[in-house]
Length: 301
Image (cartoon, rainbow, N blue to C red):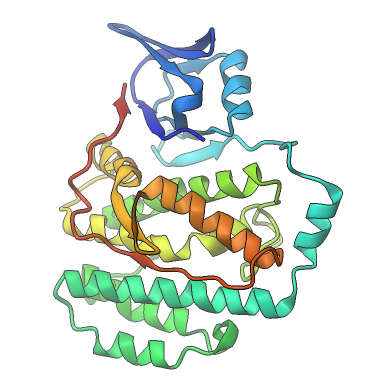
């Protein structure tokens, strides 16, 4: 898989020639090898992309994300027939052992809560009550500590009156960041032949991305941390660029320094192997770095 995140935010044509994406704008012409691309984010309604470019990007498991009139991600590409998908693999997915599902979900929630506490600590908030809730976490989060912590956590970051349901710029930025994160997680799930609609905790029949919604949880606090550090009056292009470039952030996972996008790939791969009984142990050790606003995007058109 590639490593470059490309954003297109102005009038442009994206085509393909000899294994390279050609991005033609009013003032420039850029060539990018397809196999170097991780995500192509088309952040404008004034761009066109050829079917040859879409096909070549899909063959390299590149996620193409389109945004709507409000600037929020509105749709994305998903491979219909990844090479690794077989009837046996899908059958194993819908029959993942309950004990493995419960154990993994417990660890996912624990990792998310640990990172929420880390973020609140970095922002100087009092976290004793959050830590008390972690101590109450049970197998499969039977008492829904995740929701209890979330109700306390967001007001610590954005103020006592803050609610995730409010129509405010902070929530628009959070939703934008989560959407990009979900796309990255889904990309890994699909590239390994699994279906995104069968989750381990999220079971909404109308949600085609239940599994991605489950596995993205430990990384949400990194989005939260960046948004909480900004003064956001609107979901401007600069805010979107800042959120996208988070995925080029260097962070520590399982004790090693990795780019955020690579961490997502390794983490999701490990979770799938655990659920499919290819490994018997799973560790989720994601550390929230304290320099989340210092990285630049790879390409900005």
